Length: 243
Image (cartoon, rainbow, N blue to C red; front, side, top):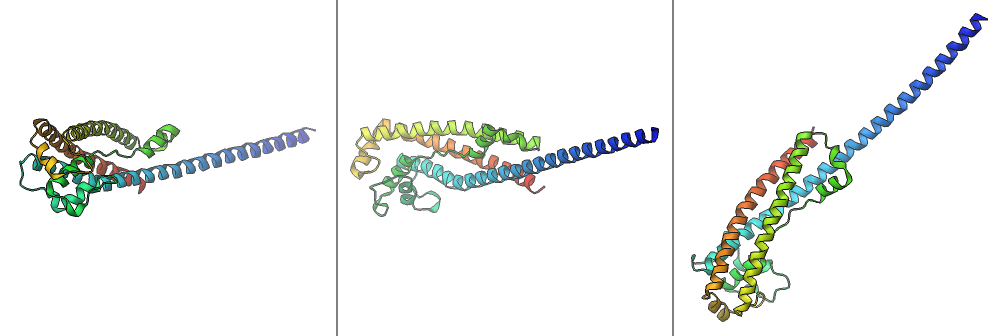
């Protein structure tokens, strides 16, 4: 009888061990599968973030040229420089390309008209934060295991938010310049030389041009800082992806 009882308990112990072992293996497999999915999602998010940063850098090149063109345009219209030809590129092309549905003919623009067109076109630029906003909205930001990188990403997009506020200030200056030009008979999409020459003698117009030039110089400096910050984060994200 004792032998039968021992066999019974031994069989129960074996079955219990098999059941417990099977459950533990299943849980381990689930954890491994979840971990692998999280790592794949982390790589996807970091890859998408890299695309955002790379696109921002490409657009910032043109935006930097635009800010420099606006600063030179203001200086030229104020008579502080003898010609308007930013960075060796066609002044007409830079100015008119930033106007939508413009009635101006680039081939027939004078330097003064091209300079005004550049200023009217504006210098603002909003950096993309779509991937970062997605990570914050879905809670997937926590999937980035590198704590230092998470802090760097958060700090960068805080900086981006501040940068976009500066853009709003630049846009307000552009709007003010357009308003004063209109009051002096200069329509942004139909810049007549005679009206423009007369408007450039107006102290209020000149004051707005000077303010616009200072704003453009300020924005050019900010854009340079943004390029540095974007490059630094791009390198950090790339380093995390290759590990």
